[in-house]
Structures are given as structure tokens and as C-alpha cells.
Image 1 (cartoon, helix red, strand yellow):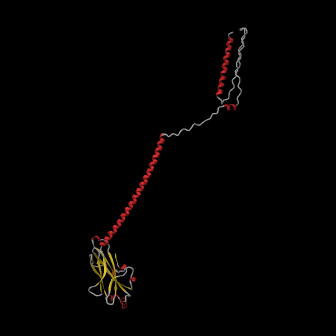
Image 2 (image 1 turned 45 degrees about the vertical axis):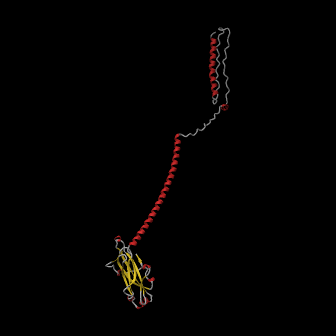
Image 3 (image 1 turned 180 degrees about the vertical axis):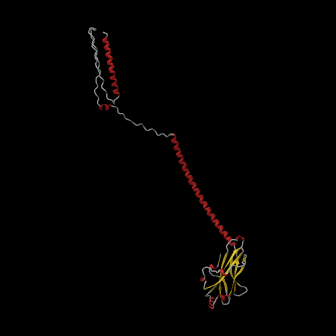
Length: 316
């Protein structure tokens, strides 16, 4: 009597325990749409043992076990269509924020750029000032050079003015008629010492027939043994000429007639070499004065004047 309810209770517990895994599987399949749903497991029906008729007057029919109906298989395409579509959306770009060191670097670059620009301007300004200063220095140097050249010219002019100057001129003799003297006078401001005198006579038709430069034979006139010193304003005789000297110059009577008719001209020329004897010009080079006189023959009177080309009358 007691065993049949016990067996019924055991059967109900077994059925409940068998249905629990199937429900869990159904729940899991619903939550996972990508996976295929597995058919529910079938459990065998457990029949309760028949009790002997003698134990109970009434028999209780055994309770049929409940079976889970099998689910039809689901197609793969249907499962895929039932799967939720996952749309991946990229997150919005984050804002480009400056860090503190980037801001410092940017500010430093701006400051360096400004400083570089200012430095370039200052350099250009300095170069301009240097150029103007160089131009001013160049102009100053040119002015100083011009002033020094002018001063040098003035100094040379002063020295030339202070040096002895020997000029030559022809004078008629006061004691003899048709007699002439060639005089050398010191027109400078310092005394001069005459070291050499040269004179000679040439006879040509005109001035153009003379050589371009005077030619002297210095070997015939050696240096003076006793040099003549001329103080400023003094004069001395360096050559003499008389009308009677024409006969010695003209070798023939025809030459004398040519001089008388002015077809031939007699030139008396020479050179005076002298020194400046002042202490300031001890090492100065000697000076020279070239002179040339032209003789004019008349019937009764004659004359001697300074003449000839410019190269024959010069002061060195």
C-alpha cells in the first residue's frame, strides 16, 4: 500500500529532473541567435511497477510521463536572417587639444621668428651705418690727400721760390762800341755757386735749322777751378761777343756777306750749371739754365738779343 505512492513520487521527481535540462537548452538557444537550436532530448517513459492486486483493492493507473515535443529543425538561412545585425560606428574624433609643451614650443618659435626679423633689421641698419661711415672716411681720406697734395705743391712752390734762380740776359758794353756781354744774375733768395759754364757759336739760316735740343760738347769746357758764388741780386759775365769776332767765325768772305745780308744768322748759346749752397739744400741736385742769343749785323752797328727756340732758353 505504501510502495505505490512512493514510486509515483519518484517518477514525478525524475520527470522534473529530465525537463530541467531541456528548458535550459531552450533558453540558451534563444539567447544565442547565431547558434542552431538543438532538438530537445527525449527521455524514455518510465513505467511504474505494477503492484500486486492483493495489496490494494483499487488500482491507481500509473501517471504517464510528459514528453517534450521535438522542435522542427530550423534552416541555416532562417537562423542567419534572425541573427541581429551589429553596426559598428566609429567614435567621433577627439578634439585636438594642445598640450602645455606644444604651446610653449609654438610661443618660443614665434618669439624666435620676431627676434630673427629684428636682428636682420638691426644688421641691415648696422651695415648701412658702416657703409656711410666708410664713405665718409673715404671722402675724408680724399680730402686729406688733396690737402696734402696741395700742401706739397705749396711746399715745392715755396722751395722753388726760395731757391736760387740764375737768369741770363745780354747787355751792351759801356766801354766798347759793338761789344756785348752775356750776364748771369741770381734772381732767387738763396746764394748760388756756379760750377760749370758752357758756350759755343752756331751759324744757320734760321731758327728752324737749329737742332731740336741744344747740343754741347762739355769736354771742351771743364768745371771751373774757382767756382763763382752769386748772392741774391748779384750778376756776373759768362760770355763776351764783339763785332770783330765775326771775322773769326766766318771762315770765308762769302759767309761774311751772307751774315751781312741776313742769309745766315749767328747764334751764341750756352749752359750754366749751379748749386744751392744753403744748408737746407746740401743734398739737392744741381740746377741748369740754358740760354741762346741771336746776333743782328748792321752796316755800322750790331745788336745781341735773347732769341732762338724755347728749348734753348729754359731753366731746370
